[in-house]
Length: 190
Image 1 (cartoon, rainbow, N blue to C red):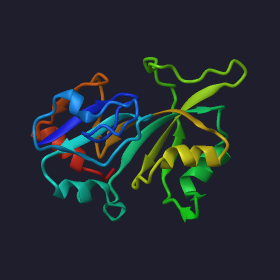
Image 2: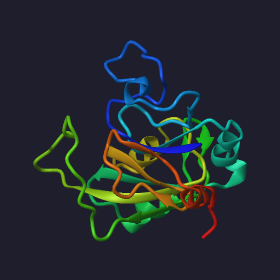
Image 3: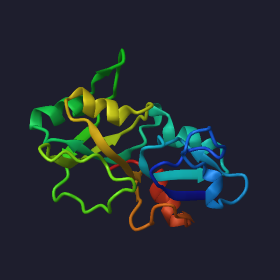
Image 4: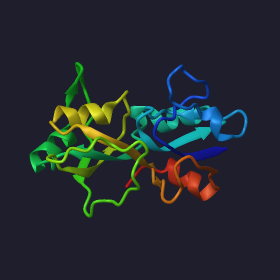
């Protein structure tokens, strides 16, 4: 079984509470014996997969597999082409070089429902959405990458794993994937 969950803000990627105000996955009535494949930080949103098949963890997450994940990041200020190129080439973050990725300005800018609580708003600082496609996923990697080029992330949403897109699944909702959707998740080549 493979489940797609649209993880809302302030939800943990684990079934047990950790003492924070963030809600655990146990509050979302998942079937028994599933566990998250990978994780999203409590302040990140979007596509989180859960499964009862342990072998999927390595197949989908290990960088050697080259499995693609796409994130939309709302960042401060409009990045230059040079800044996006720096992201694409990989950056040294906390003593480790990130793998090359694909980074681009989303055009047109997506219409995303406001988050509750809302992101911080600064009247004199513009923001925009960029897309980042990674084949690795270190702790807070996208946020650290955008900060390293001078564009802090305000909001982060994972929108795609492999060729499977989050689409219209509402935040806090989940669905068991069909065989055709599972094939999309497992497909990573262009």
